[in-house]
Image (cartoon, rainbow over all chains, first blue to last red):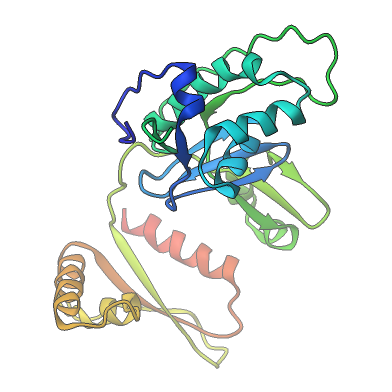
Length: 108
Length: 161
């Protein structure tokens, strides 16, 4: 599921129960209100907005467990975790396809 | 190099008020960005300054620019190796002996090359570059600044075409 060519199919429940890590070859930095993400292996740059950058930061700061990161993000944006989880799941799949995070759906 | 990624639709939310910015996610291709000090940008020839394009952000000290993207490697045709001098004489171009990889090796050598195997590969690469590329030493007097050096190299390249 973590390869850049993989197309992960992930339910929201599986994502919440998963573990996600930001690999060492991915660096990101906030820049003018958005986050620029660089995959050092592929040499590709991506941009994401503040919420996307915050998710990456929470995943890198934490132990990889997705659920606490989702709860923290929901709290910071005044949302319910179950309201933002579907969008986060799709976002995480996009990140995984591009090798920007590595998901372990069997972690839960 | 980059695949264009359509932004995600913002996550649906029933909230009627937010404590801060509305929640939403996007992920899109971005361009590498480089910064340049205002002093250095002002010293560039106008044609080079124009190539920087409009900055994506700037303050009084420096500006930042999105770098142009190439979808494949450019062909290397010339390699200029700089040798700084103390005098004020003219800038001079000097071609080393054809097929001698040592000048390129001396310019490309790094401490990463620590074992015999890697040194051999480095030498092979330098030999290939020397055989296929116009390698030129540039003796640069201390009085010659970077814009003048760039101008001299561009003039030589233009004359060679």
